[in-house]
Length: 70
Image 1 (cartoon, rainbow, N blue to C red):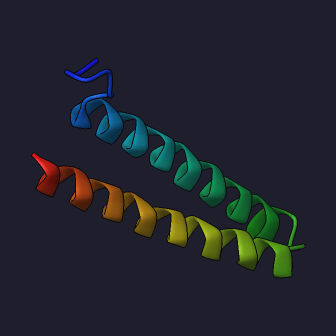
Image 2: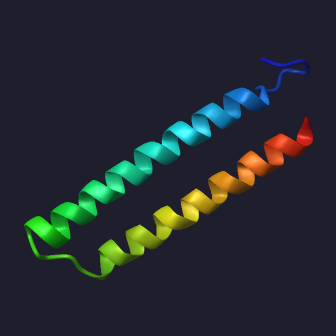
């Protein structure tokens, strides 16, 4: 932990990037399975894809905030 009992920016960045990668890979696998293997993709898959893109936006914001705090 950093001074003051808070997690360091590098730790926050590492965890954020790792979970974003896991989310993107999981979403891509789901979309591939639903649309190409099953042919049963639906509106819920589109919503999940949009949510994943928004998650990536949030990751970029966290990284930007982390960069300018130090």
